[in-house]
Amino acid sequence: MTIVPAGVEVPQIGECFVGSGVNAAHINTVLGHRSGPAGVAWATALATPSEGHVPFVAVLRPSLPVKPLTLFVTKSAPADDSHGLLIWGPAQAGVAAGVADAVAAGTIPVDDADTHALIAAVWVNPKADDADEVYRNNREAIRTAIANGAAKMPHLDDVLSARHSPSNPFYTPPADIADPRQEN
Image (cartoon, rainbow, N blue to C red; front, side, top):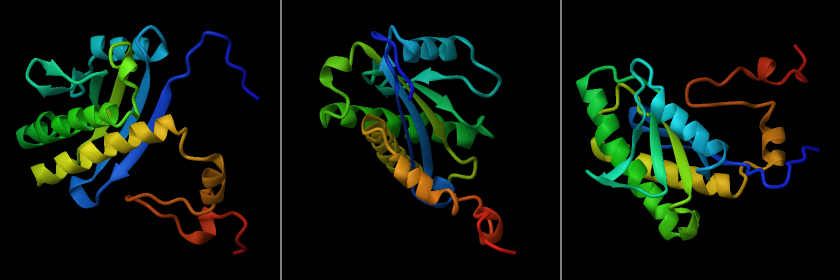
């Protein structure tokens, strides 16, 4: 059993994949108090960009950042100008609107809007081709990732029952290697 010392905050971590094909969204989130580990990670990521990966504060409109302040971190460097526009345009707008949705729904308590920081690691496929679908998928993916983090999803029983049949949109291993219990 892991014991967390009194006064130490444990950030909420969430994940969600929405959509299919090149316009799908995959988001990972870390939400926590600005004075805790999530805040330190937020500030560190903002202050240490790397080539092709420049974290930025997600905005609902120019000069109107969403709250809690959300750091948008790309999982893929912009492949070209059109890919970059999908990242900074519809993906960012979807993320910002989805975070605001989570506050409006109470998934993120209103009282946390000014005290917490959110990190959103966002995948936008370089071959994405539908701005509206990228927007919709990212809005739903972040809203769901935040809800999953708040609910401590997934449940360990679900993880353990899926361990012998892993699958993702890019690879599904054959049953004989996915589940070592299978006889050859």
